[in-house]
Image (cartoon, rainbow, N blue to C red; front, side, top):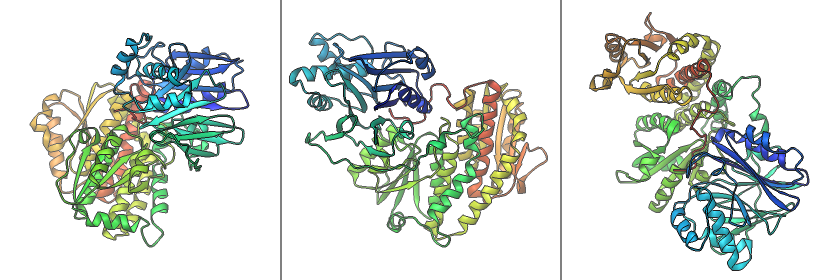
Amino acid sequence: MCGIVGGISPTEIRNYVVDGLKTLEYRGYDSAGIALFEKGETVVYRVKGRVGELDKVLPHNLKAHIGVGHTRWATHGEPSVVNAHPQSSASGLFTIVHNGVIDNFRSLKKALMSKGYEFKSETDTEVIAILLEDCYIENHDALKAISKAMKQLKGSYALAILFSGDKGKIFFAKNRSPLVIGHAEDGNYLASDYLPMLKVADQFVTITDFQYGYISLDRISLFDLETDRPLEIVYHKTDIQAEDMDLAGYPHYMLKEIEEADDCIRRLIDNYFDGTAFLFDPKMIQEIKGADNIVFLACGTSYHACLIGSRYMRQAGKKSDVYIASEWAFYPYTSGGKTIFIVMSQSGETADLIHCMSIITTRGASVITITNTQGSSLSRSADYTLLLYAGLEIAVASTKAYIAQVTILALLLGALEGNTNVISDLEGVTKVQKHIIDNRDAIKPIADFVATKKDVYFLGRGYDYDLALECSLKLKEITYIHSEAFPGGELKHGPIALIEKDTPVIGFVSDPITAGAIRSNFQEVKARGARVISISSMSLAKSEDAIVVPEVRLYLMPLVKALIGQYLAYYVALKLDFNIDKPRNLAKAVTVE
């Protein structure tokens, strides 16, 4: 959610900031803006809508070498030009862009209004800008003003700040929202993540919570809030490549990423298995084996992957629970004994999980973070990190990251059980995935039918129910069709009342133990007029099944049939002519609670 791009360069900065904002569009936003130092003045341009609209109103002949840009996801105040970032202080002394949410902005605003300050927007961001000016008036030192303001702010923030009293710097501050510095031989840059900086910087500095400072053309200065003392600058590289953003001939990133599923599995095998043994940290494996409870915390697609992971842990003989992070954060619970937490987040910056992490830390429990983002906030806070190596995922609806999440959990199961057969099982999965990719056109007629409906229901039992939840989420995310998933046995306990003539019911048949029961559920909805679309494994197939999938081991079947759900969502959205990679109201990285 929201995106920040800024930089100081010996060349004109306009196009860098605009292009950088475009690389962050996957995060989700509803307005955009840019602030630049030009001819000794701070100039601001803002639009409601896409970065492309900002590009149109922004002059091309700007002679600016310092600038910050922003894509805003509305939290305080409706999407509008007035509420868009950048926001400026009363006299224009400070102009800022901000990711995050300030919890105490109302009390701060009230105090500032009592001093005579007036506000133009509804945003918490304008409160920060005016607070900075108020603090500056007391000491006439920008760094001291930032430090003092930070000590009054409660909540999450990543700030990029233009200070009209020093037009050679971009100041910054951070707490609980990501912010990274990029260093190049001829300039310095900052952004919400690496993407905007990949073509200009080759070294990076991760700003951690409660740090602030500035970048100039040839300097990076970083300070610790508690002591206000300067910190040593530690550079690192990133394995994200600019080439990952290439569509490679595909019409949409989502389609490209669906068809990278088999590559994800192979990369994980390469990174966590050396041909004879698993490469997980032995200490981590021993901790899991010695734990009384394994608790998974996640949101959205990651939560659905954790449902499968929890089944794996139970298969390995462990007691295991799964919680939605946004719920557990307010109602934390464990059932006693030694507990290990596994937190899963594609971005590693999910605000609800960061909230959970702060609670876990006070309890002294061990944490394993599973993420696709090296050096992310959740990774830095964990005892152990398992990287997904899925490569850049740009489409908002997660596809290959889900495949990577389930795969790494399967590999972890293999390591816990000392069972290397999981490797050959996964290699079998990649072959069946290739079969589905080669035969994806068979899904198009189903998509054409679903695209005409207002409600869709998914049914499954066991692993198939976990899969049904994820497939239902994919459909609603990018097609805006109402969709729900149910365990087959729950139909008669209420949901069957929703079935009407020609209602699409998509059911999965993968487990011989429940195959008869789920097919009985199909008959129940058929009797009420539903159009059943059954997706079965070859050994359980019937002539009426819409799609039959070659066999893989049951515990890995979600890695295969998930592709069918992903393709279905993709083709329905294509039929309806929706923005597939950037669905409405959604963000790739959910960095606010």
